[in-house]
Amino acid sequence: CRLAAASLPAGRWLVVPSTFTPGTECGFELRASAGRLAALPHEAHGLQRQAVQGAWDRQSAAGSPNHGAFWKNPQLQLVLSRPAELLLRLRAPGTREGRSAAPPSLCVALFDGGEQRTEATGRGLSRARAVSEGGLYAYPA
Image 1 (cartoon, helix red, strand yellow):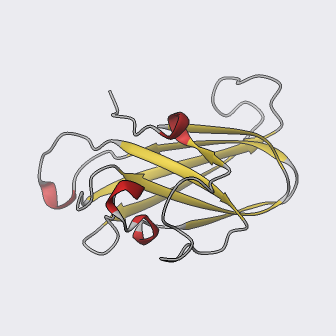
Image 2: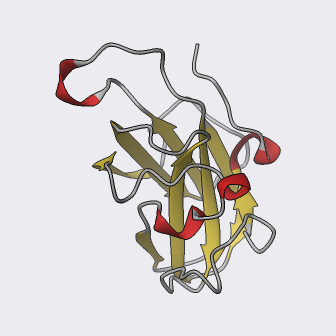
């Protein structure tokens, strides 16, 4: 899934990748590209990129906000040193422990401030600065 955020100010941001269904244990890859874009160019044109590998495990596979524990999903800090356009791409290339399964439905949310979400502050996407696919969980093709 993809998240494009325009005109972000410099500062700390919190990125929360999630699957729709709680208990979905699998690895993920999150790619972040930041730069000043006039239009969405082909990937890597004038952008600074960073890739992060992670996983949803028994403790962090919390699923969507509909399931009540969204704040348990992995939380990644992102720092922009100057105002920028941001493109995030989230994918789950495979399941854990060699088990085959259909790819999970995915979403990535961007929150202001970079502070970890807790049970009190992280219940949903309503306070997100930007959400991939308009807040719908995308099933990768």
